[in-house]
Amino acid sequence: MFSKFKELRTKEDQANSLELHEHATTVMKTLDEGIKGLDNLDAFFEYLHHVGASHRRIPGFKVDYFWKIETPFLEAVKQTLGDRYTENVENIYNITIKFIIKTLIEGFDNANKPATT
Image 1: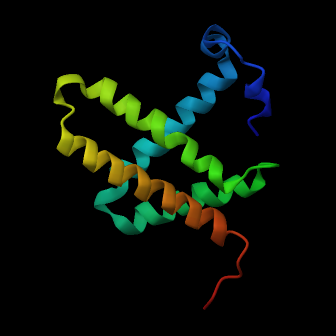
Image 2: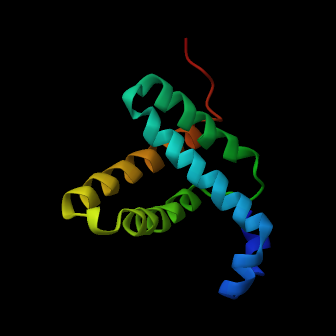
């Protein structure tokens, strides 16, 4: 999965990679949709479980890869909010991103389990 990004060794290479940009945009859109969905937990779980399960189709994808979005996401929130980034906001987003990642992992883990009726 990330082997194609390993070739991007410098920040300039990363900044100029259309493929990396598209992947980062997709990840951020998924996180945005997850956060928006928190007001409807059924839709939230359904969406993120589906996204998590879809990663089963990616050859060599490991569940630990989901955790790689945590730090960049939190840094993006901090930069975006600037002065509005308080300790309380930091705690909220730390809890939120962990909840989202754990939900993605549930979807990934449950993708191969037979449905129970």
